[in-house]
View 1 (cartoon, rainbow, N blue to C red):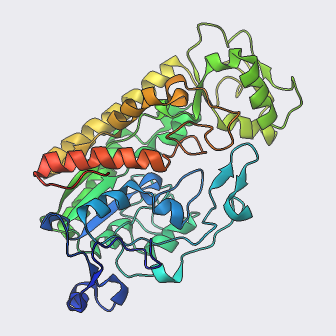
View 2 (cartoon, rainbow, N blue to C red):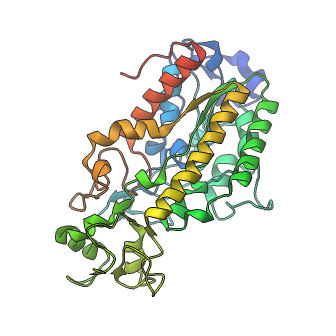
View 3 (tube, rainbow, N blue to C red):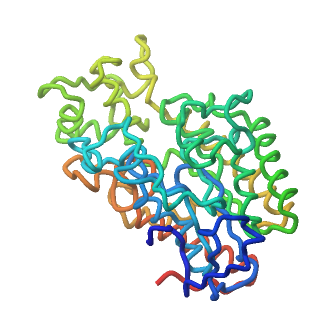
Length: 408
């Protein structure tokens, strides 16, 4: 990537585009090899995955690995993003075992944007952490969930996400919003606290209405919500019957050998619960006792928080299925394509021992959550972004009879 952080094929500078992008001279870049006029002005709306967040952090290197940039490159179209200087904001985890972050930074480090990326019109307006409440709101608005998120201001500059998206006068958009409406509730073991279906639909409707009203004739793809229970940040309770795995958890929790208790009355050979890996950080911080139970107990939060039991897994799946059914219906109603990321996840799962077993590899400092998930157990790594881009390109070409070339 160049310092201007544009994806350009042929690097043709067209001063005549000043009328389109105002006085933003850096944005006067258009590829002479756009594969279809439909992709003349592409915008990616989304949250952390779209932004390029990996391993609990983000910087210009992880941003350059986003599926959105990959498909823009294949489209042959302009792609500008708010590049975050290294080590990042916050720096990604570089070593799972030590929790060391890129450049020696911490979870509160923020290096802000590189000056060269201060362009008026962005093609990637995604911001990590947003829910369906946020794309049409800005700081201080009722219901706004992101006042503590500096990336909202750094990336959007006081605009709403939809307002920022419309600055590029988009002809094509990908929209991946909704994962965070259910992600944290499911990981913590309380899926029923996810955004209610009616609220989810109202939020999503408002976002899409503002986008299509502001960009008449726009086409694109709406992207579904990932089934959280398939993320390796939730490990199977059966892994707790493996002494070596428990020893690894004990070490990660900062406890002496034997210091972590696995409740034998709930963590049985027939238990099917999933355990949220963040429970280990909570135990290390002494905010939870050093006990893991695999079902609800008489001493909550033991066996409750960070435990997704069989019934709660059904609840989480039902919530996400309903979200996705609505997104698919909305896509059909406005003539957009629909991409289900769970299809990609299902395709790569058999290729990955961690994804297929739900047992993190605690012996690995750099591939703890497998070949496709970064070191936070949730966000796709570079290899997974390639697979997402491949499948998304196939959806776009099938829907619009276009010929975006395959990723080599």
